[in-house]
Image (cartoon, rainbow, N blue to C red; front, side, top):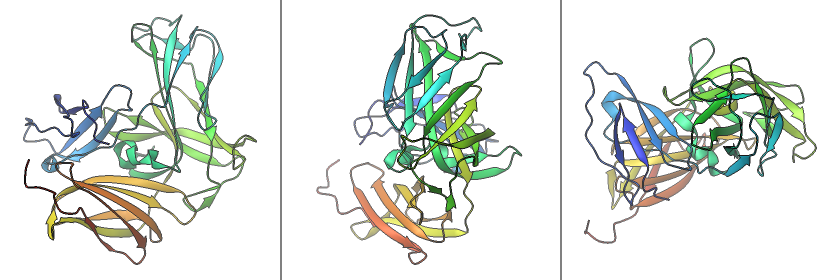
Length: 331
């Protein structure tokens, strides 16, 4: 769905998308800039940001996920468990857990925008930063999710609340798959934890979560972790594969630039998603699986032509997505 009224920000310069979900504007960057963080935000959607090569800013694109639930908390200063209606997700907080932006204790009524991500469905089409990350050693990594939760706490006047220094909370949600990245899950298994840094447009590794037993989950498993602040948290394995796929878009027998989403499904049913804006000559997408299914969707740069195709690895190394033919020549 084209998203109207989304704010796109590049190096402090912004524009708002029109009814076609598009915005076009000029930005000034230092000549020395090599990488630029582009953010995409809209009320009641989860903010997305991604690092781009400064030379490749002609076309950028993002998918945004709507907040799934807003829960009222009558007394934020009390110890409590906040339960989501989705995926068995919960947040357990101790007494006096939150502070205001000025560091003073938070009390009284508050709200939490609570979104457990469904890693088996289309939610991952909006995974922030395409899963690009930096591990605990500072090395770049790509991620495949075992579970993801976004939680944003605010008070009555809209101040964003955060956990006080020295306080932690516990988060948990169903593990919908018994195998992730072709690794069998078991109670006690450790999964690295990553939080999304919106300012940097990257996931950062911090601590580890655990697989626990949960009779209410279809698999009998849940993922659990202790966190020191709230943003988007992810139970993730590093995804390292040698596969590569070349993809192009065409319309009326001509190759055209486009925005693509590649939903990758591995043999065990787990998956990840990559989004990209590609030129007419196409691009090689690396770190793809050697075996699996990829569900491709694409739209042209005007957002009016849409196409989709499914490919299979290891056979389909070259993919062409047909966007069809424009119905008229009018703009």
